[in-house]
Image (cartoon, rainbow, N blue to C red):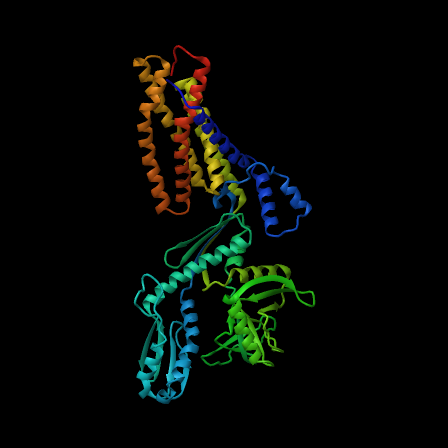
Length: 554
């Protein structure tokens, strides 16, 4: 007989109610969003001002408040395509090798004579020694510094190559180490960009690698591409260097192991610094905006234990000497060391306003980008264009649903009405699931929903046509309905499995808009099968149990 167990009925009803409850905040999107933003602000330590309290009251606490995040094409925002200058990392790596290379060569000084670093391309470290006869000893001493590469592709290989030509020793990164370094640099850049964007409180950014050295960044809701560039485009590399001397000219000649950087505050002032820093921003664990003793905006910082130890030892050994705090190749300040700084913390002062101090603290807290980025493409999408896309998507969805409703009611009468109710629940379930998983809805995603609306009734059509056939041979309408669902099930499952496989392939191999389409299509397939097999059937059974018709027309 035509029956569904009570626990199954309750389960179907609970799933539908849960989907409707999860989808409900999207009907009142602005109110729920303001409530969520206020909750996030309080979780981050903001003071509960009257404005925040008013925003919290925009949505009841007892109801779900998760929203479907709107993509860049629907909400407006900024789009950037950045190229990471991987060559900068090679230069930094080789600069870091210089102290070790120098110490290793000093141990064989009796064979190679005096040593001096030479000017060289960014991806090389060149050292001249005065006794060419000691070339082999110099090469062996430096090769002993080589380390095995920590990567799956570089197993069994070392990280540096050493060559000697006459009295010149050249150190370069090996090809395997360059490949591993490129991969680490891209992963680090992705993570730091994500931290910086998250620190700024933006919603659902898209940050992904493209090709060997490019990163795609899309941030919905941000004001402009320029604002996004200011947030993530600064390297924010903080280093602390011993000061050799000052200069008043940018043309000052410096040695290969020295740097010439301008002063941030004093126009025309330059500092000659030792190339190798004492500590770097990699040793920072925290940075916060603050005010100095004069009430002016400043930025505080705190080192990790190793950075604090190195900084403490340097200041203890150089009391009375100046040292420079360098931010992105500009000297922020160059104070004289009055006493050992052993606490592992300090303060950066300069010509900051409050906004600049806050932005700098975000950049330092998120970490320094390992290499400079060049922006190849930038676009700003206004919220008006995004709203136009939403309106167009709504119109398309309503037209599609209206056409389906008219066709189903005209073709199947009361059974078509049941299918229409299930279709509405189907759409609510799609939005409920997207809200639950924190999915992002894009314009292609709306296309996936529109396609789902058209496909959702396919299963009902298969069932209803099968019921029509069974009415000609079955004993009574109850048996016809039961057989219709049983014998149409295999066709429904087969058709939707193949479509779901296609959606999975699109999600796996695609990116950006293609993935957005695949997500909504895949979720729509699952919900349409559920509503066709369970929801429509439950509606028909409830109607049948109430009316007990002797004959039915489908």
